[in-house]
Image 1 (cartoon, rainbow, N blue to C red):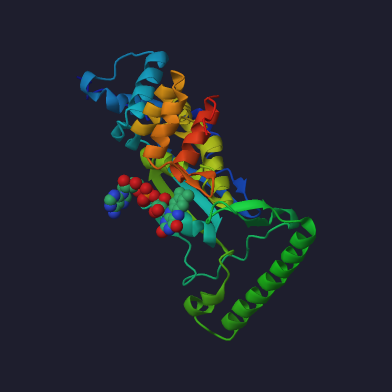
Image 2 (cartoon, rainbow, N blue to C red; image 1 turned 45 degrees about the horizontal axis):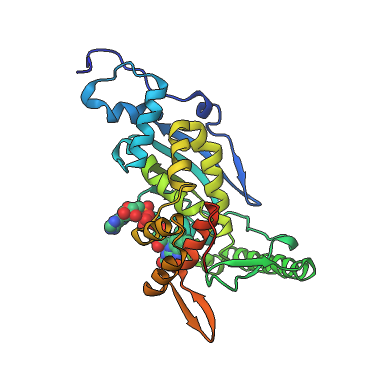
Length: 306
Ligand SMILES: Cc1cc2nc3c(=O)[nH]c(=O)nc-3n(C[C@H](O)[C@H](O)[C@H](O)COP(=O)(O)OP(=O)(O)OC[C@H]3O[C@@H](n4cnc5c(N)ncnc54)[C@H](O)[C@@H]3O)c2cc1C
């Protein structure tokens, strides 16, 4: 057992200490900055090995243990680490962010204080068309001529909504009511504290290409600028197993086995049996699952048999 009489030193990470309080810009007027943190890779290892005492394990063994824990979803050791951020985010993006219920949040109050005087603005080359294939996604970039017109009308709208808000405040309207017509592009600020296990869950969802561009920007900054410095061994394992790794369902594994053995016809027949493929007006239509499997095959450099 660990000697509980010994004096403990607080685990810290010099690379993260160096950026404590430093503003990391996001989007046009947003930011994230680290306010505080608890624990390091070492704390995860220490928690996992609590039954054996701190020991004198080498870094390579720590790396192996962290990879094992992450790979096998032994999650509680990762909950021993916590991160507290100060974030400044447009309200539409914040609305997605706040759906992650496992964080502790204190948000800037626009009942108590005048709203942050900044809106997310869109450059002419930043407008995105509606995706044809994903009902909740973006497609190609909009032409810069049209983009210039959209950015111009956006600026006029921001100006008008700001004037309306301040007119109400000047007329003595309560801040809690005056704010009701502020655009969703208005920036808000919050302190956001979360443990590493739930932070990795947030990053896996919000760094993914299916997440909206704006929240993805923040998630990528949190991952690359903060988590990679704070817990480098965990970050490496997360990239390997979660973010960039592939998972295969039972059906996919069976299909892959058939394809690897050159039994392509059987694989295609199996795809029809499972209704992943069907024919419509003499063309082969694929289900969403088949489409996702196709992407996996392409990543593995395997031919797609349909
Ligand atoms: C690409 C994308 C598209 C989305 N589209 C929509 C949409 O169209 N509409 C919409 O409403 N939302 C949408 N969401 C939000 C999504 O459904 C989740 O609410 C959000 O991602 C938070 O995920 P979470 O609940 O896993 O995270 P957290 O709230 O951080 O929870 C983490 C985990 O803790 C557990 N947990 C937390 N609270 C509870 C609880 N009360 N009961 C049981 N288990 C709990 C769960 O295991 C959960 O996965 C979308 C999210 C993404 C990433």
